[in-house]
Length: 320
Length: 264
Image 1 (cartoon, each protein chain N blue to C red):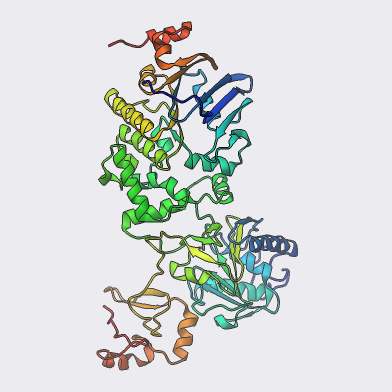
Image 2: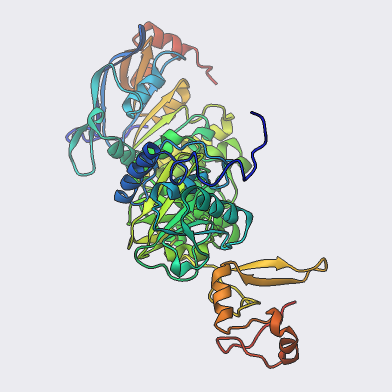
């Protein structure tokens, strides 16, 4: 009885329902999803199940994915934009095993994309569904600790406090210092936490042709943005919302319009900036775009460094 | 502080037969009065006499066991407070009303800068220009005699008297018509009290505010109010113009209260 399970004794998917969750649970989650889609930005409570992984690893997103996944779907899972990090690999393997669905790393090919903390760079299209993993669904949580009170505030659209937070940021730092999980207002009504995506991604939330679903497992909340929902990042008239901008292009693919990760490359402070969306970066490189540190022509790059031009024609700023 | 009050205007707030029981225990019983713009009403009495209960009933924070509170809105309608929706009640609270607590920590956000504290109500009613909010906050800090250069400090860095003045600025920034004050000078030393009372008197006169101030301090009542209601064991035992009540108290309890003030 206590014999350790090996892959041989536990073959894929037997003993589980399709996509792990039982049908009644999926039905419950779909009801919550329908309500969430009907009231964009409104947090709908749902009876989140215990999943075979710890809270904080995407249990909310996985339950949403499990509830909407069909056998014909093509699944992509990203974690901070990357397809190859532990979280993404594990979740992808989980659904391959329990639902036997096709998986991909290509944004354009996926029908369901589960994501942690990013929206893919490639614009989404109608028919695609983006599932966000949400740690804290309540945008007012750190401003008002009482859940009873935040619910009333949402019900009455009493959001003055949210702007007090932004006011404080400007008073202290001269600008709104929030760079991720930047609060948004949905269709002029609900204030919503877009999950900890960088504010760089906020503009992509608005008027997206794709369906966007948000699942918070520990907090047991689901919310949604139906396609073509107007989403506005909160700001002041005289301090408008500004997405993050980067000084340098991606070191691998030369992209100047993507969100970059900082990678420390040695112990003397050398760093490189690369696209956080690995699929986007790979596709660009496959199309022949080259950044300053793209491995295959590194030598070439160094020799050309002085007069090399960026993709957009601007002169390159050498990395420190 | 005599000031003519036109009797012809309908009252801003009218209480009728207000009664509150906490189970078997009496909070207050059968309180009726009215108040007009520009008028300051003091409710005095010892601890446990039902003053704070009455204030909570009047401001709609507690449901009354019996009786009603009628309020004349800016639109001129007379509304029963108990019949207001939560949304309407909150809107009144952040536009037309102010509430100054005895403990400034209850009336302020202690983790937020003074400017944020003053600006909160403006932002709650839709102000979205940082510059305008900040200019208005600076103006109000100045009006309550706080150095506007301290606008970015949190109230924790302020003295007790400054906190109380900040609380007043935060409440008056939306130009309310009715302000409730619960022991506004409690816990302040005498010279600070005097300054605060001076300030309140000036603001009341400038803005034509109606103020209901609860206090156990007869000196505060005398300096601030036009009329006084004396409460004991949940009932109003004496009511009238401040000077009349304090100079010629009728009820035995009021005589006791008045005689217990130290005469300088």
